Length: 331
Image (cartoon, rainbow, N blue to C red; front, side):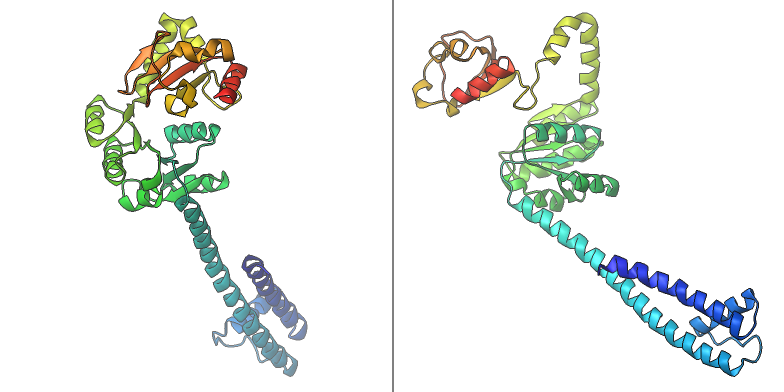
């Protein structure tokens, strides 16, 4: 039987003993409800208060019986309560250990610091791509939500090294810090960069003054939600059709995406060190190459067909979902 069930049974037994005591004193001693209730409580609690009146022989025997069963129920209740509390803590510790064991096995995963508005959206997007993600959060209510949604989490303060170390940051691919305080985000970036030099770090920022500080601290990219939101709203006024078209270029899951990044390093050997023209994606898949990222991390919009496919570079490809799917099958 589960400890919680045993604890509930012990409570029912206590009420049952009180009911027996009241009924017994009413019928045996002809007492009123209040007098019988009083005698039951002082008998069960063994406080030693005086009797209301001299008990009969039957009343004394009933009192002895009531004391014995009260002690038995007390022992059972205390044991059940202790077992319930202990098992709840043990169960919680086992659950945390199980989660930590899964996190320790992760590689090339993403760590999200803070499960607020921005952090929640980041996790949802990463899950769309089936990317493993670990959330660091200290709010108890949000921890329960993460647990219910089967999202791996670390309960703790992301600004503390111990918390981000538990998230297996040394084997992680990226870190997103979306804490409400720029100072906290700066601290997380500094700590994360020290623990993993090759980590891609994306940080949230609220003020312009924090932008340069986060870059110096080691952030790869800084996102300012308020600024992006304002620019997007202004663009909807100036060029509404263009913005709506761009918004429809989904980059979500495998069934809906319209954009794809193709790493040259992942191409078959026959295409390496060739040109975009040699690749001939338009004829083979229907997709169009709209961008090229050089090995020096420079971006070229609408690259020439003669652009050479050198190592450590990438192609940005545009197409309908079925064309993107065909591209993946070929490459």
